[in-house]
Length: 547
Image (cartoon, rainbow, N blue to C red; front, side, top):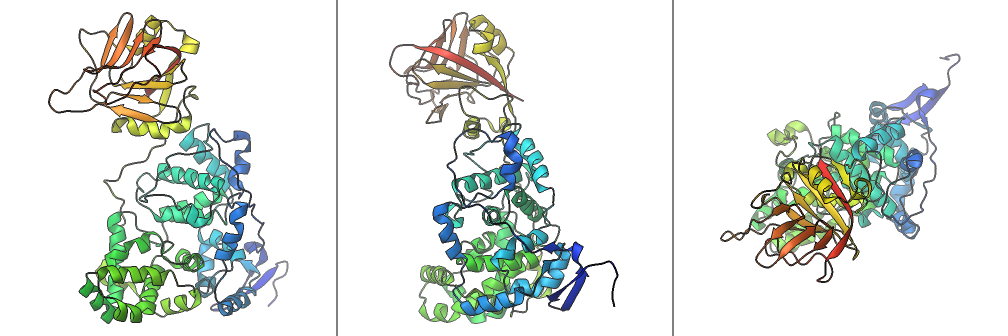
């Protein structure tokens, strides 16, 4: 039957030949991503070039390009040839997640050719066409008008560190990863445990722009399609326990041996929270990810089962205890180069939700005890420290202030150096962060949690602290010695102030002529914060409040 005026394409699917209008499909073509790496320096990104920056792909350094290519080569040419033969007949990619899953399910199980991954994944992850403009709006919401080029302390979402080297990311790519993590943590504040996200961002950056990668992650975080990624340590444990059900019913002898050695499926919870990227060779893990993005976390159960089935003989005959068992598992999984055979075994397992029992009813709610990430913004650029330093400085503050932004209320270079003017301003501030630069090149400061007002005694509480900025950022908090604890925090006078007066010395003393002295202070366990014993002249003063 002919349809006049329409262009139709034919493609092979697992249920026969699919016919659809040509304009409804994404044509298979892909630009070659840039592999230029750059050294990242402090500062902010050029706002006039922001749309170009977040829509480009400069994430693989030249020296690592070949390593990345090698990691994508299958060790088995036969499976590679078969895969190409199947996918070579595809002339277009369906335009929706639903169609891709319906028509390409079996093809995806066989592995997506690397040149087509970005196109197939883009539909599976429902990446919007206007990703760049929408992502810039999110960047401005998270970072304000000045988007940092370098981030010191990104949210790790349950990880100990970021997998930068594992994914061959360049310095620029590493900063893209950190920016996206900040956006994810700020836009989804309840998602405090998601260790798989850093892996996914690192992988997606090889196939998508920074903006597209963010929306790929956002799709998975919202998880309206039943992918079921664990979002708390307890849910990650539940996933491992559920796998234990699979293992017990499928390989009962190995399950008995594990119990004998005191090994449980919970010992492998990291497998699932890392999406097996911490366990398998890179190419094999990518092959698994293809299927996970299409079918969800149950694929991980299948692959974990296939791994244990492959290792069954060695584990039953060569292990003599728990430590030996776990070490051999780690060794053998890293040798799983034949992804074709592994996936064939995985999908040979008959797994249904009903067969897994009640343990599949995962508690996917976020961890209520995890700390909430907040990215502080400052009303105008500080002169005495880098904005990125705030990531470290905010960790020094009382918890209640870590979700507030900074606003500069005093700048001596603009307001003048009258100590009286300074005192009037400080008297109205409930909590303040004061930073001084000195003639010896130092930058020091203090945090006070009460208004600066004259009193017969000292004011302030144990939340007060002094700090030092520059190359080495360090804060010195009150030392509670229980007995005879010193509490001489702030004493304001007409001609200056003293802060941290202890039996060994005063942490900071400033007179009305803006000369600063510093001594070792037992109250904060702080060393002298300025060079030499002579007073240092204060060059600049900035005062910030929390809003």
